[in-house]
Image (tube, rainbow, N blue to C red; front, side, top):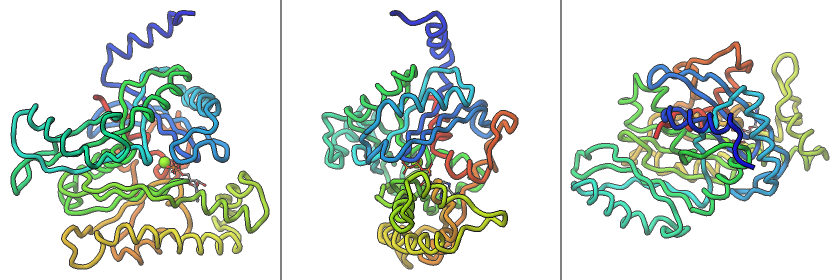
Amino acid sequence: MGASLKEQLDDLLGKLNPGSVIGVDIGAHSLKVCELSGGPGKFKVERFGIFTLSEATLIEDEVQKPSDIIDGITEALTQAGITSKTACLGLFGPNTMTKRLNVPEGTKEEIEDHVLWESEQYITFGADDSQIDFFILGENEGGGNDTIVAAAKNELIDGFSDLLKQAKLNVRIVDLNVIALSNVFEEVMKDNLEEYSEGTLLLDFGAQSTKIIVYKRGGPIFTKEIPVGGGLVTEEIQRQMGVSYAEAEDLKTTTDENGNLPQEILNIIEVQLEQQLAEVRKNINFYVSQGGAEKVNYCFVTGGSSLLPGLIDKLSEIAGIPVERLDVFSRFKIDEKRINANLEELSAIAPVVIGLAMRTS
Ligand SMILES: Nc1ncnc2c1ncn2[C@@H]1O[C@H](COP(=O)(O)OP(=O)(O)OP(=O)(O)O)[C@@H](O)[C@H]1O
Ligand SMILES: [Mg+2]
């Protein structure tokens, strides 16, 4: 059966309006879709949809329950009222990588050749089977051009693109979630970017992983994903309280009328935070130690698990720098009539998908 007239029209409109894509962020706990209007300095979140996935739908970057993801995307799009069909897909995990490279001056072709040649050694999943993209950030003070290379394995791109296709979306742009987050951060901090560009740590505390981004000199200089996150807290609640995944999720996030969690849940969270933040600390040590050449001065956190009670205080203690939640809606406008959500929670879980929806090319 051929595409319906409406599908053909949507496809055509997508082509006529190349600037607009919807963001699709497939997370381990939930998938999110988002549509923006406006442009740099005046973006507005017009539509946002979320679908909570069942336990173990996604393990690392492997989809265990493809039909749940396809149905989830359709459901989230309907809920959000999104009819646009052109998407920017966010990727993550061990079959993706970013690398900051300093490349000698040259023509565009020379720079490209150099980037492709030099980045090969960093693409552990095989440069020949990957898509490689790069952006030139600008000239480096010490000479050459600062560039960011991003790569993803073809198999990963194809696998997720196929799921989106089955949910009737066309993938026009593929991005990495860590780059999307860095782009959102830049947009939110536009007015003070010079200061933050001296060294800022961005941490995205998700369900199955924590994303570490060191932002410096106009872009990310380091990105890493480590396997700690809110899912481990849920597992521990399941184990200790003898409850199901869904019940444990509820226990973790349902507060009493004063906004407090039961003491036994708080105790589990505290022990987990201790362990998980120790792991984070190991990975950021180089950037937060006194006297380090690449020292960062600030830290902003995102991700649903950044809402865990005690996280901000513990993190600033171990990192020795001020830690704040990234307040996306200090910059992005939002259609509050259409999007009925707690803005603090939305600001935690939405940055990646907003960053994906920001892409125009
Ligand atoms: N209010 C809250 N307090 C504590 N944890 C929360 C709260 N709201 C959500 N979470 C947790 O945050 C996690 C989901 O956050 P997020 O949507 O950022 O993750 P994800 O994108 O699905 O996962 P990942 O990025 O690891 O693939 C879940 O573990 C969820 O239990
Ligand atoms: Mg996520």
